[in-house]
Image (cartoon, rainbow, N blue to C red; front, side, top):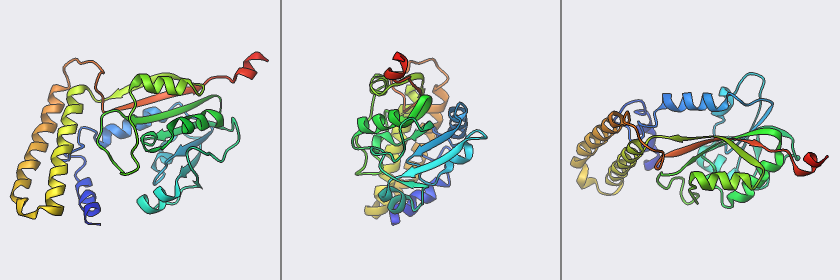
Length: 249
């Protein structure tokens, strides 16, 4: 409870460079979300919907369905989705949905191939999947954090289930990713001191200053050209290819 309260308080600083995730700023996330959801239409399933905030940002005319696992929704987020279900066993008919959203969820699925197979099954031909997944990011929501995939792994796993990638966007340049990891490491030290090493409280201002400087340096150096070898996240837009039996007919 104390750790949750600390994180809630730190969350109020998200717009300022003293926050360890400032490089993944709220305004950047909102713009990214709006852009990613723009191509969607029809019945849209949000797997791992948490508080269903994504539903408010869908294009006009979409029909939103929020789905989450009972343990996650009730115990962790204290929310109530439209549907309680497992991502590996979706309670929808074949080809019955026009879009699926999988935002920061696939790393938490024990059996990601089964989840992708289910998404491929419930999407209609031409239906779209929008997916976000970390590539370099600390363990979170433990113990339900199982894997990370490279760009090539994502493309391969999606293709196996009839999902063709039409856009794959790395999030953060390498220098910003490295800065983000340093800031999160400093934040972990600060939280550990607050929870278990109170005699080290005088160190907290130093850690806060390190977060501030690291964020500003990471932002300043991000204007330089760089490759995409070390992003923090990937954002993917994939389309459901026609079923084989339908192509043949």
